[in-house]
Image 1 (cartoon, rainbow, N blue to C red):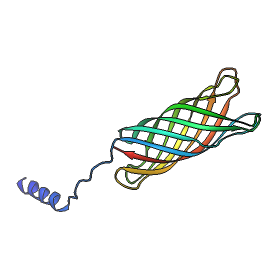
Image 2: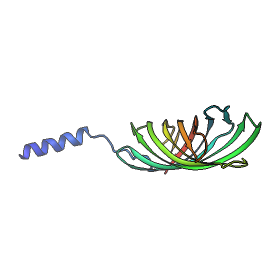
Image 3: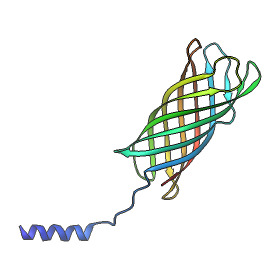
Image 4: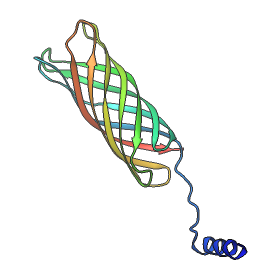
Length: 172
């Protein structure tokens, strides 16, 4: 038994690799991209300058939860007017890998308010997300994020949007 113990200890000491620190569990960043907003039987509304502030906390086993504040300037092709929209959203993500490259999928739930419209303008939205974080250092990552949302409001047509962001994040 002593020989097994000393042999195992010697093997571990000879072949062990140095421990590496984990990336931080908190993530904060900014994303910019493009988005398409539409309702059935309606002309398209394009988001000209979508931006998003993002924050998330790693939970465990590849899952994290987060929040984002999206902001966008819309151009309505029917009225030929521009509108500013701002919202909030909550999401969860599942990370397939937790190394320098982190592909993920998830879902988000949120709301968006379009300022300046004559009609009611608060929509509840839900949809899938997917993307990739690529670490350029121990504390910074970059990567794309794609989304598709359904937007609900009482007495209004169902609307949908899809688009993507390119984000820069810091981990701490």
